[in-house]
Image 1 (tube, helix red, strand yellow):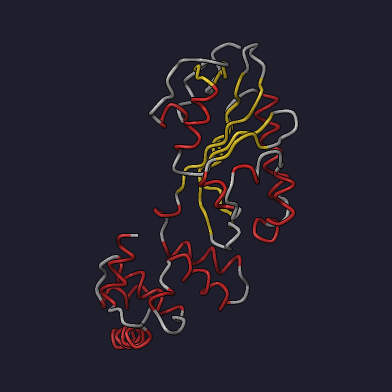
Image 2 (cartoon, rainbow, N blue to C red):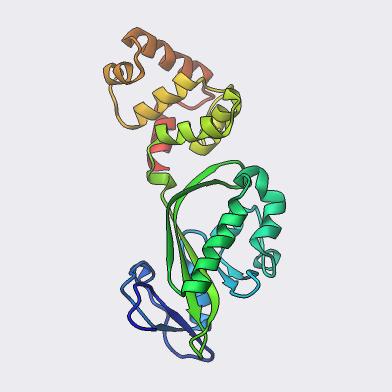
Length: 258
C-alpha cells in the first residue's frame, strides 16, 4: 500500500502483543502498519477518555464501544449499541444532531473504506441526548485484517469542550436553541451550576459568573459586557440572592475545578 500518510492497525487473532499506552500513536499520521491484537484493541478503546468505537466496514454496524461513547446516547450497556448503525441511532438522535448528521458520518466512513486512509474532522460540534454541546476532534482509522483488507473502522474522539471559551459555548447554545430561555437553561446545565440556585440566572448573571471564574475584576467584567460597574455589582448581588446555601465563592470554586 506504499507509505501512506495514515495509521493502519492490524487485528491479529490470539496475538500476544501488548496494547499501546500512548494515545499519540493513533494521532500520528506518519505511522503505518502498526500491529495490535484484537483483544488489546478492545482494551485500548475501553481505556480511551473520550468517545471511541469500532464499526464493521461492510455494514457500518457497531462492533464495540467504550462507556464515554455510550453516554452520548444515554445508553448503559455495550450490548445496546452492538449491531446498530448510525442511521439506527439517528432515529432518536436526529432532534439533537440535526438533519444530515448521520449521513455525514456515513460519508466519512465511506472515505475511510474507499481510500483506506485515516480521516480527521476538526472541532465537530454536536448535541448529546441530554441536549448538551460537545466539541471534538474526531479521527476515523481503517483496521486491517490479516489479509490487509479493511475489516473495521476505529473512531476516536478527543474532547475539546472543557477547554473551549464559555462565551463561545453560550453562542452555540443560542444558535441551536432559538428560544432564549432554552439556550440559558442548557448553558446552565452545561456549566452544571443549576443545583446551586433557587431560580434561573439571567444571561448577564451567567456571563458575570463566567468572567468571575476567570478571576476577572468587576471593572473588566463591566468593560467586556458594555455595562457600568454599578450594574455588574447589581448582577452579582442578584446572583447571591438566587443562590441556595452556597456562597458565590463555592460556586466559582466548583466552576474552576470542573
